[in-house]
Length: 218
Image 1 (cartoon, rainbow, N blue to C red):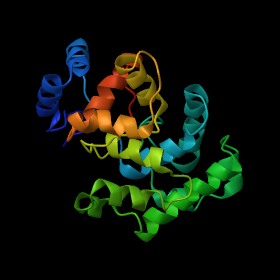
Image 2: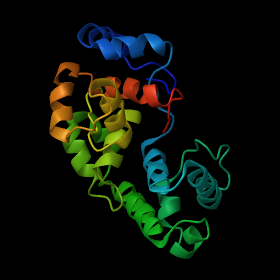
Image 3: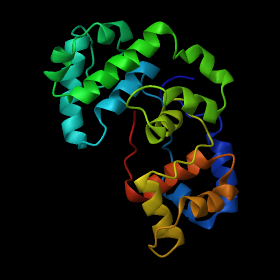
Image 4: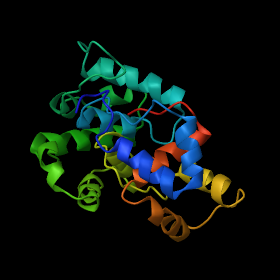
């Protein structure tokens, strides 16, 4: 599938979700013509996720541009380049720190690069893995927790049925639309989302749109 094309399941998902859930039916109608789309390769996507952890979007963007300029000076784009894991693995911690990265994130990025260079993370094998198996492989990397892995499955792998119950945006949207603003437990979120299977990623995406109409892209 090309980077900008609609996921093959998207139209079926919106039809099914609209039939099963009145909230989603309204949101799907409110945001026509937009959908999930993949923007970069696996390594670059995960590296960007690590860079952006626990800092503002503006700060993350500034650090990311300096990071790309350091590890891929010939890149045509600093926003969505295609980074070489070997180049990151060969870049020393001091040079990464000069980009504005914390010492911890510099270590995380080198560990991520090492996993790709060694083949411990091999995107060619991921199609054979179910969601939980792929999440397990990703969280073996320093700095990648379950939330980051779930975002990767949704935004890069375009997996259709991921429910990130730890995501603050999803928690807020469910509280707003289904419980009068009251937050509910992860177990209650999973119960609510049973009707959304096998398209929980799509339901999540539309609920995010209700909070921020501009789609985030990774």
